[in-house]
Image 1 (cartoon, rainbow, N blue to C red):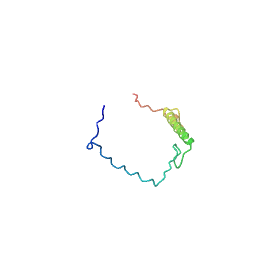
Image 2 (cartoon, rainbow, N blue to C red; image 1 turned 90 degrees about the vertical axis):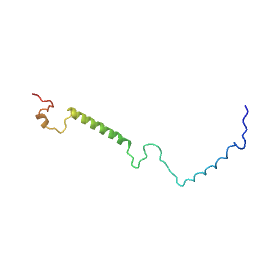
Image 3 (cartoon, helix red, strand yellow; image 1 turned 180 degrees about the vertical axis):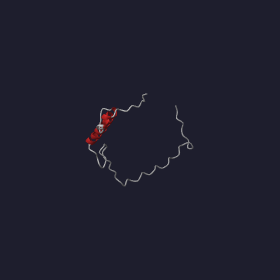
Image 4 (cartoon, helix red, strand yellow; image 1 turned 30 degrees about the horizontal axis):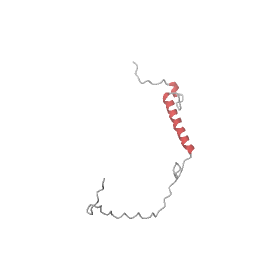
Length: 90
């Protein structure tokens, strides 16, 4: 096949001049290494395990208290009074 020749009227117009490059940077940015150690006051790794243990033990104590297995702070009062019932008996 033959390529059509471009006539002077159909030639593409010259492209616009290239934009000037951005000015050079005036500041140097130093980024920290990726990871958890980025904060000003870093917590040691064991502190996260301690907090997890506190949450689990607290949830377990709450669950056992609600189930009636764990009786803390009730003293003799709880033993002398019968448990209350929600249903009314006639």
